Image 1 (cartoon, rainbow, N blue to C red):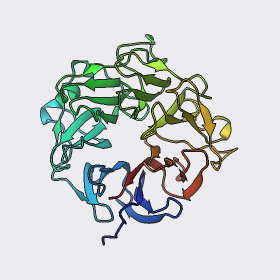
Image 2 (cartoon, rainbow, N blue to C red):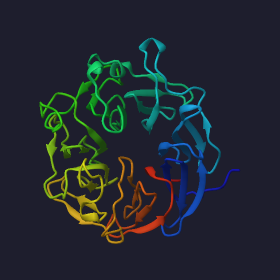
Image 3 (tube, rainbow, N blue to C red):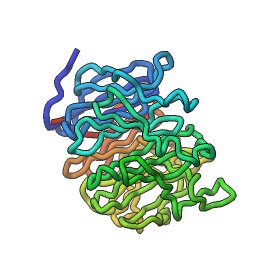
Length: 365
């Protein structure tokens, strides 16, 4: 049964290992809950389409029905597309999970991208009803050498350039960052300066374990990256990444999110390392930069610790577009936190959810 979500509300879309939940609020203090949706089914990512502020996309992977992309009007019932992203049978490949859904550019209202496992990128031009693979990447000559990260061989980050819809970047674990400037026809690795400590060659052309990507909202093409082996920033117009881990308690983490309006401003959630994926010193904290990583400042009043030994996954940190900006953080222990002051202070929004795989925020219109 459909439920009304008021225009002007902030919506939090939370994907978990056992279904999805939508929280909504008019003041970001008191939250109402819709769901659960997809009960018992892992939902790796959700997105509220910024082009209309009402359409929600969800990437669900059912053990019975397999992976698929679903669509709903916010507050309404989800339905699967006419078909799911899938490889041509001749490739011998089969989609096992949909990791990420990304709405296309503002002037292409039906365009949607899906990043899947095993690593591939698909495009829909009818809102997720039908899909085609971007085989310039999916069948790239280097594919035979691609190796999975700990979470699988997954394409989990998709950036669509707001200045040029032909320009996209994709993050693949553990293959690195790839870029196209011709709408997906041809792709090239973009990993100069990024370490791969787990390989004999520490700086290969590709093979890095990128964890998450975010545009610098300066709007000039700068990009933030959280990697298995450090935090990085790539300035606009350059190919080489600069490591910006100095000042952080750890170079390891999964989540990174950028300010929607302020240049060179982003947040990360460091974890001890791949050997122990918990907050350093047992204190969950979010670190902020306003200088593209040249300096960092710890924030986290209201977050748990000491003795807080949860993790935050790659889609577990999100921002809204309010003023001041709200931040939202989900843990793999099922806790959801929110900040109305750009991360300076935090309050618990929900407890005892299933392990949280993703958090996304959007403005309801």
